[in-house]
Length: 103
Image (cartoon, rainbow, N blue to C red):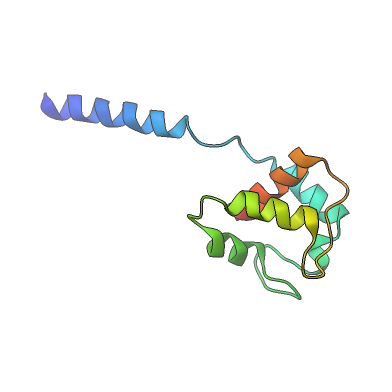
């Protein structure tokens, strides 16, 4: 009987944490923006090219609270000779950053 209540409590707790996650990433829109901006000329999901892979970027920033905001700023301002994402609004760029970090 105690196990039943413990499992029920754990389920409720898990649902509570799941509800606090950020909005879902629109992968198709992010991939379309990456293609339109020619990001894939220098980046790939799996392997490094001229620039790092999206997987390696996601691993580098995993667990960092400001990772998405930092990547949005990087994509929006284009420091260090990186091209600025110009074909999307702020929401599209945020979605692109979230997609990169989700790899």
